Length: 279
Image (cartoon, rainbow, N blue to C red; front, side, top):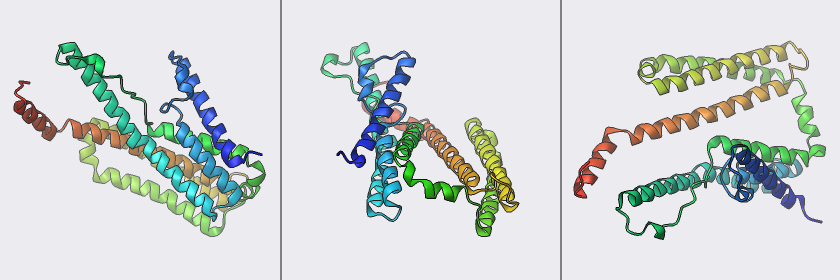
């Protein structure tokens, strides 16, 4: 018998690749290579490692050394997907553009000596998140008999301490969001892109903060089924996903600002001068 610790991740990988291929076909890019290529939506790497970590969690428990190992590996692989491998893909895209431009202007003698570099290597954060969710769902489907205690916990009423924590987190989200807006109000007005991200941040935090306050009220009044733990857990999960998207948008904005800064422009001029070229 093949161990499920092997075929569950393989099945997650297969599903991710099939979804990726279907998406590309819908977009008009029918290529059989998407069945085994890396990159794209969703991340097959994330699906594999998260399905393995999820299956281990369900069957070995959170205290299992094996779960610790698989969780750390999953974190490393997902970080590498939208970190190192994504950077390598961006570098490949830049080099391909540079080679094509040099070949067009005649500054490259033998452009055919340079092969086309593969640009789709890494992932956007959303692709990694969707892949992780897919992996978790596959692990759950093969562990239905193990999730009864989890379902029982989620469908139970929270304790008084947990209700107070829900109220506290909800109030903190609203207060911190308004505080950040007050501190950076002037700077936000001057930067259009930053204003968009701030609006997204404000709406997300205030909406989910109010939702948590409502969840705490329902739990305090024992109004079933909404007064159970699952509502607060769902709200916090949505908040975490929205904050990951906000961090990604801020990182992209910071990258754009860095590449368009005066220091970079002066460095470029100095490099061109040293190379004996005129801008």
